[in-house]
Picture 1 (tube, rainbow, N blue to C red):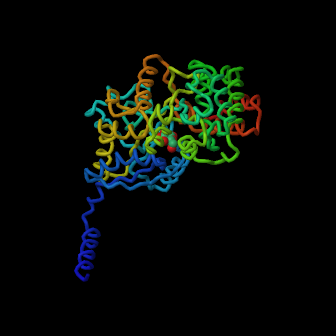
Picture 2 (cartoon, protein in one colour):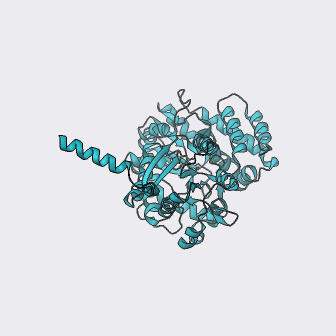
Picture 3 (tube, protein in one colour):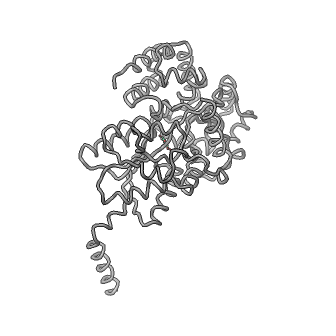
Length: 417
Ligand code: BGC
């Protein structure tokens, strides 16, 4: 007993007096991957880094789209306490790059030939003024529907809906059969995520581009936008009364457990089915929001690295290189439900929904139908995105009419940023 205590004391003393450079090999990482599937995927990166002697200090801040995580990040930078690295999306990357606080990853990118390997659409965000400032770990997309196969069968739905009208008919059947039609979490980012797919389905890729990427007032105020909001009101009829503030993965759980028929959600939902050992085609179905086949509203999770000092640079470099390695790009995304951000990563280990994500991305990239997701910060800067969230949420919750929503959305698009 005495001996053990002595040993413990000696170990503690050794740790406390370890040379400063022991801290070199640690990374403190802000992210919002807190669900079962997300944590499992992140474990691939974490474990691989730990096997290289890098200690992982986790700073998880839940909330899809990352708004809460970005609030924490801002506060920390203001307090001059940046983390080593942070998960990030879209326009936020550019905003931080402009502040001059991000590490330049260009030497690593040149060594690893990232310019050849990463889809060009992503590079518009990962490269700022000719310098690589982000390492992309995945490519997600939002125009997906997830369905419980047994529930559909019980409701008499035999094939996946290919058109919007068929989708509504199927939602009705599922509701009549005594299930919740649509699993939704009442948080504005989730409602906005559904709106990505609804707008794309209602107006097609050119309309989506004009409205959400070009912020064209004609598109924003058009009858198609009104129709998109009316469709949101239609969806609302199939949601259960307890949806307020439900987390997205809890909503996915309702589809997994056979309480609900469908969920419209980005393909991080696949991570939850994977985590529950569910098999595509057997237990559940994944398909594009009806009417959006051939297009992809994408968001790519990246990590950026802050200028925290020379002593941490080695660990940052190791982390960035690890993110871009075939091992992590495949291992992480097989679990996460996304397509790898590195083109040419083998799809051998992915299930049918993962393979579809990879094939859809390649198709959309070739056919000019790869569109930045509004809900995930890849279409408009955060100020406009947040104003859009607010309008979409109030319309979905019946606080304003579709007509009022059209006007307010168009006004929000003019916001200064
Ligand atoms: C991220 C995904 C994440 C999801 C839900 C999205 O903003 O891009 O990686 O799984 O939020 O947390």
